[in-house]
Image 1 (cartoon, one colour):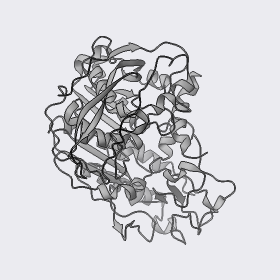
Image 2 (image 1 turned 90 degrees about the vertical axis):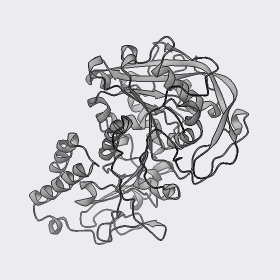
Image 3 (image 1 turned 180 degrees about the horizontal axis):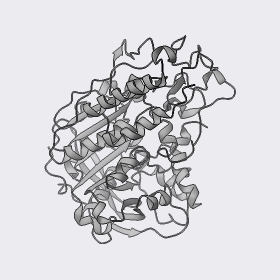
Length: 493
């Protein structure tokens, strides 16, 4: 199965068990009328539901429908790559979309922060990739989470709401993605200041900050939202943008009977914001992201994560809690069937969210990180290991036992496997791909016994790199024991 299965697979993994800019909150562009929140009908499986996991964590999961009238936006003036884009509200259309809320069952556990994910629809469904990547930090630290079905493909796609459960989602309707930005704004307002039914129930009065989040395709829409819509809406207190490209999504598209309004490429984050924007890039994203690189500021930070892929093994197991949804093996071409990346993306992503929490509250910005090294337009790699140079480092790439590569070229398996990166164990070049065009490791591969004479020597170096990552602010002490256990569990024979 291709990596296209990730977008469907993450949702199906969860369904299967059940089958300048001012302060946020008072935007200048008012809704035509406040949206209404109502409970979803109790009929069949919840798409991307995680009821069992939430129960075990002491969390509540509830699904709602958000009903209202959304505006499209119209581009004003000339737009440039600096992201300082002017827009104004345009035509309106009715909508009914869904909200999927997860929050602590004990109100005393709530940390006051709501993490609002723009559901990813690349797989023609509504998937929650960043909940998968961040669930450990979100749940242990008492965040509330709300997923928002802002785009039409999540409703009408081949694995979308109507296809998965037409009875439960009969009332859902979407006017098209030109209206997605205002739908996302209205969702944030409905969470923060509900008109009647509150998605977060009795926690609503304790909300202090609301973070907007988007991954991959949703990250491209988030860039457009930040640059063109946030200055009008002012709903969110910060933005967590994960795995974006160098461009961004159009403000409007012909499919919605709106004139197409593409955005400049590259598209950088505007520098006149008054809320923080944290961009997290996997190694595999950086070749497309490079033209949009920009310096860090007090309110803009970018981390590029060495050894990580756009869609890795952790994501494809629903956040390390389920079986691997699929592989990128190609039976007809074993020389291309390098295992997908099992790199360390979740660990620095958790640290980034912890920094975001303090940053929004007026604390210091996250530590700046050097970008991944580039040479001749390509990522520069250590010739001895095949691992990329620079970027946010972890013990997995600084004390390596295998080559972790975020790029998959040539791609074994069909379709989106190009997003899944590569992992090549150093086993004496005994794999069918070793020495071939898909091999990310040097030939011959490093010899582990020469790098680490004993298991204890390896663990000692791993621990030193881990402590350095924690000290530098790129890893969390809360994750140290889990990372040490992962290293200790490695078969050393």
